[in-house]
Image (cartoon, rainbow, N blue to C red; front, side, top):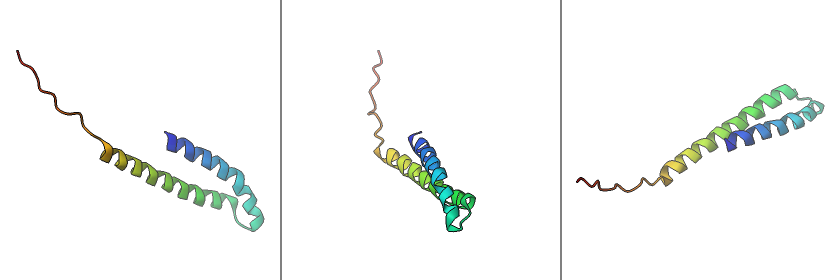
Length: 69
């Protein structure tokens, strides 16, 4: 959830800044798509890292002996 929210905020910031690239003879829509895609891939990479880290840090609870009576 956190990474997705950060990604959406970064996309908003990109949308605001990409308009100025039209002055540099670049198509703002293409720039937005390319950079947005790169940012999405980076977010997915970070998610994978977080999942793998969580898997390695997972410690199962010790087995408890059942009392039969």
